Length: 116
Image 1: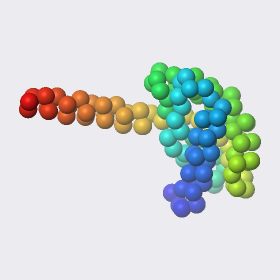
Image 2: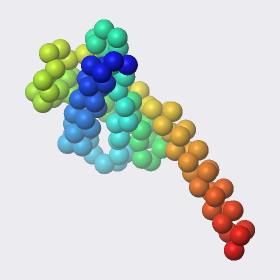
Image 3: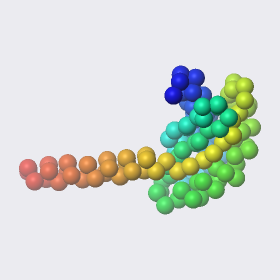
Image 4: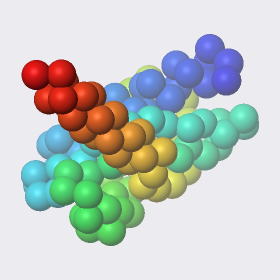
């Protein structure tokens, strides 16, 4: 990804996180994990996770329902010339990484208990 793509991705990720913080209730808590920008800058995929884990469908419905509000927010709060088409998706890669971390911590905790 080019520097320009990374800059646009970070601007949109940060602004989207602020929008979600302001507009969404905390059940489920939505975390914007990353943004993927298309090569032509016409579309971005906004990836997110939720707490609790089983509420992704509710978060996705919220984001899709408020997509046009988010676009207006991005126009107002960022200096982007064009606001790309927004697509939302659950970040299953991040979810899997968290699960692996939990397993790793469980293994390390068990090893420490055995040494005592």
